[in-house]
Image (cartoon, rainbow, N blue to C red; front, top):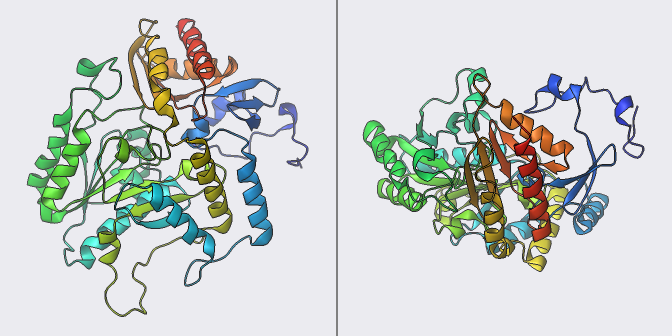
Amino acid sequence: MNSIYAPANQQDLSLDEFWMPFTANRQFRDRPRLLESAEGMYYTDVEGRQVIDGTSGLWCCNAGHGRKEIAEAVSKQISKMDFAPTFQMGHPLPFQLAERLVEIAPEGLNRVFFTNSGSESVDTALKIALAYHRARGEGTRTRLIGRELGYHGVGFGGISVGGMVNNRKAFGVQLPGVDHLPHTLDLERNAFTRGLPKHGVEYADHLERLVNLHGAENIAAVIVEPMSGSAGVILPPQGYLKRLREITEKHGILLIFDEVITGFGRVGSPFASQRWEVTPDIMTTAKGLTNGAIPMGAVFASDQIQDAFMHGPEGIIELFHGYTYSGHPVAAAAALATLDIYARDGLLTRIRDLEIYWQEGLHSLQGLPNVIDIRNTGMVGAVHLASRDGAPGKRGYDVFEGCFWSGLMVRNSGDIIAMAPPLIVEKSHIDQIINTLGDVIKRTP
């Protein structure tokens, strides 16, 4: 048996028992990529090689790695009280955390429901939306609208409103009464746009078509990512989110923003809804909430949403929903320490000063072999590669793997290389990321 205090080297490590998520397990075993430690902008693998983190772990380590303040807060809290229930009980930390979160949230989103992941946040948001309409006497509003290429986690609610085919096709029947808007990826008109694309606001008007098809009185909510991250950094066209807001308000439909990826400074404001000046009715978050240190998510809702449940006898449970670990004390301690770091170091808006440098670096890769598009916003970027004949995704995987062995961690979504470095990134780190990626693309057929 191996101990975390004496890590096994790769030769002694069995790779059979752990069924890895979202991984080609057999392929991974042929040449494992094993990380052992992390500090600042860098991982170190089991062979002692440094790998610059071009993805903030998994879109979550916004403040970089090895933050001692978070480790100390977790250690102190787990020694003081490891767990406390929040069903009909309470402890101070989630109340303190909710207050702190509301201070940085979009105006009007003043209620916070804690979860343990982005997937749970999405399912929570969908359930709140359905129950809200029923509480108001509009129980016919049961239909949910997602979007093609959307990613909303892996719960049955999330894959139902999501629009990534490989996340859906193996799991049979999903939630009934779900429809989808078209995605906004338009390479013909918007390839190599710097920042938000100019063309495509009309894609939002498809919501009016769905209203005409199903009837507004039957639609509960529309859920979209302000920026689709997992599908390969698909950006909202200029005016698109505002148009969705206008249509949903017109028809009494709730608008849910999935900000699991865009939240906590990723696009230059605490939340994308603030950067792009559109406030939803409900907002899902996770990932950067604790800097990836402890699993935790949070759903933000307006006063109006919660108030709809606060009727009837005061002794009844208003919302029959929650998780054993909602508002977990150790996770809350990690989140509070994370918010302290964000505030002290100005990380929630820091990349405003670097996004042009990042943009110029990314777009310097235009013209390299097989590059058909480059997209960017805030401290997020994607390089879209042409697919090989008969082997979609293979070129993207080869670039992803080549980057790792060259000292750079990126993400690939098919043939799209996605990057979102920690918000502590400096210009020298951006140079390293761009130069390494460019070299790998050049030598990848």
